[in-house]
Image 1 (cartoon, rainbow, N blue to C red):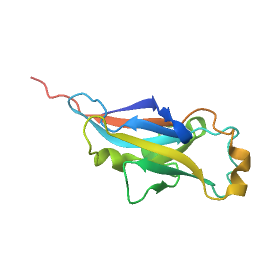
Image 2 (cartoon, rainbow, N blue to C red):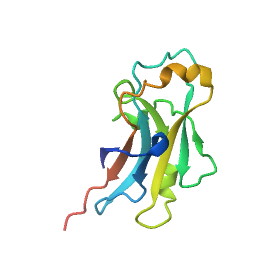
Image 3 (cartoon, rainbow, N blue to C red):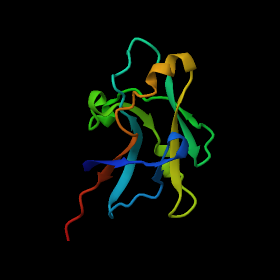
Length: 142
């Protein structure tokens, strides 16, 4: 089995919202296994304090629309936590995608405590990225 990583820049909308297509192209025998939105902060936040940012899933409508950062785990070893930024797991909207080929997933960075985030206005090093992990099985001979 082969694992590959694809990173996609989001399309920015008004109000600092970023969107990606929910229907991703893939080849036969390849399946999506994980999807993360990455926030690369500059400078990195103090690890001793609770992380003040959340990701608000604005489309599609979702019961758990306020996403918390995901802890670093072995299943995402292709994504270096220090280099890639804070990860938010967004695989469920892709697994349950509806709405045809033009359906999008959109997110917005929000802060839980306004005073804790005043310094963070210019802290995103770059726009959020969507990272997807794909598994492909070896093709049978013949």
